[in-house]
Image 1: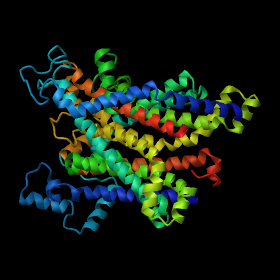
Image 2: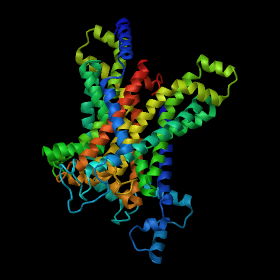
Image 3: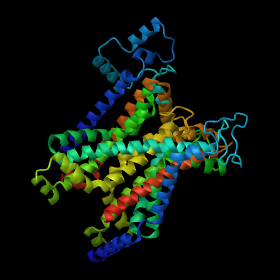
Image 4: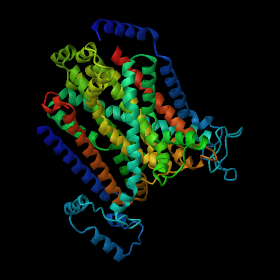
Length: 285
Length: 315
């Protein structure tokens, strides 16, 4: 491939991106996530039924006028449970993403800026943690030790942090050599100030995109844990748990398992698309 | 050789840490070790004494760990707390289903991922590329258990093309039973391969030797297979370890969703029952497989790329 056409195309593409704003897919993903966030916040209010209310005489039924997504084996309204389930499905992944982001950013900045033994020790630990079969350890630790969702969230944040530390560290190492960082050092600013007030804003976009991807990973992993019956207590309205409880009903009311499965899929896909677009924007800019 | 020695040392260290963590599960599990190891048996003075003797609970901790590890290395993980059968036998019973599922999924992953990634790179920026890239992104996001349920509903319940539960007896039956689970397991992995393959092939497109190969009039097949595929092998191999880890953990979910009695399902139920000997054996084996495959991948670098062999580029 010759050099000139490539340059022209890239320039044209970058200009087009700047002019057009977010594409239809990005808008769609953002819209879906906003709707789901609304369900997480107000889901229990808009739900037509109490998500825990049972109707054993009714049992599992197909969708109808009374129950738009049908009912499960205990006669609970599937739509209401899905709406209520948005909270645990989305809230905990947000906590994981924020925790991962905070830990990886501060540790990555520290390793990348200070270098030396701090960096060497941290990178050995990071290498070791990355090489571990993470999700397997998580399932076994949370499953055998019990302890519920809080421990699952904490363990997950510890698991996701090493990968992000690597990214932040390499970005920091590039930034610390630039003239503005040199100038800040010459002015005698403290290391903490340089790291968090000067370097951090310059790597922030990548950190945000990374947090979005941690959110997706946590969403998938946590609903997966619920699907295996680990973490949340049985009966909680949660998408992963609903799939597990209702997967035997595929002939009576398939929607009881299919709707939560579709919701997890759509949420994960939308957040991935958004994160990917963000990354692409940043690398194009 | 320094390369091989370094990788070997790292692999051993990792296995050591993993074995300590695995053994520590016993100490960390709620309740004292005797109680945990008694499992469902009645707790009498005799049974507790028997457990103390059987698991050497009166020895100091390092000695106990060493005894356990020594037995484990020789394949003796003790007996399941529930079925009372030797753990190694229990696992061996479950292995064929999981091995079949994993192999089937790997075949699907490579058969779809490699050509799709190359095709996307060849038609860069076109509708085909955009379609493949978007599908890969979606495939990457879909959790295997959700995919399993959607596939079950679509192809087994609604269309009736595939059986709903079980693993089948004859080979043909087994293929039919394992097709949907293998697709569910392969989706995410194929997405990783597509993305990696596409990126590697795009990287290649700007290389002088590719331009010259085309200018020399090298045939299409030789251009893509002899030049492109061989040079993209390294970055694609790199994700091999990642794929395997995804395969192992993905199998947990997929086996449960499809009611397959494989190793993954065994681990999930053992975790649920707190059947510690089974859990420890499976975690250690899973870890050993991942470490071994990563080591093999490092060695494969040497075979595929002479530059690594001569220390010209870092793997």
